[in-house]
Length: 266
Image (cartoon, rainbow, N blue to C red; front, side, top):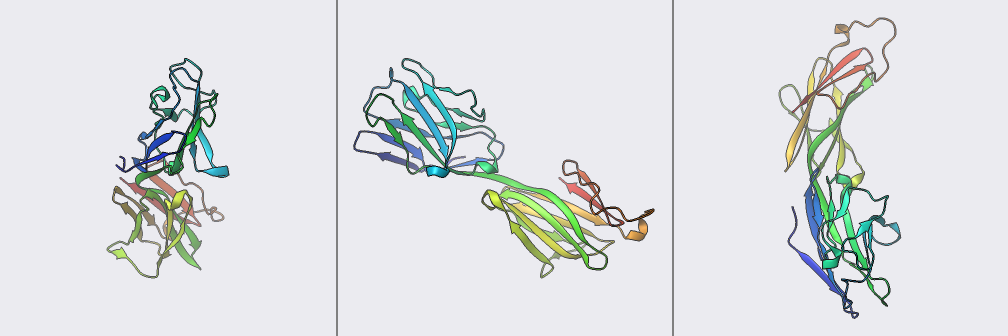
């Protein structure tokens, strides 16, 4: 999924470079960042170096680097190159397009391509505008938990990720829950693709559903709380968190003598 807008830059030395201003991708799918160039030097038999960076300046990260010796037809990356990245284009044909396999939310950012022709004065050029990569993802509930005590009251927390940032709602046994009992706790890193919502005054003997949605889809998880008298516990109360399996469809929490069942709805 790409944006049609293109950007081109050139300088007085005869260099020019064309990139796409913005590229959109779906989480888990490959994406290509287009970049092509022209310059006054013949490159069929010249050595070349290609560099792709995430970010600009001293804080940038080199994601891909390859070298093409004189006369070579391909550009070879170094032995430590991350295999998620590879050139989609052929630098000998002035195409530096980068392919990213299995795009992730962490890949969001601005990318810059650079080409160098060693042996020529001023024979290097880097796009200054960059390509903005936006990775989109359907909502995913990462965790559903309960905190508190019988004396102070219980609070349910729902941790969600997605892009665009999902809208989180809580549903009680019979209706949508709104008002002061619900509050967002945080919108974390990765350009705010993670958020946590809290539901206060959770009552034993009730069920509560966390529902996360954005234009790409919807995810739900339901929490069941059984009253303490229905749980046979010998000795001292169990620790706050005995087991929480996020990778399974059914999730079980033992909480201060109270059983919480988390059922993942798909």
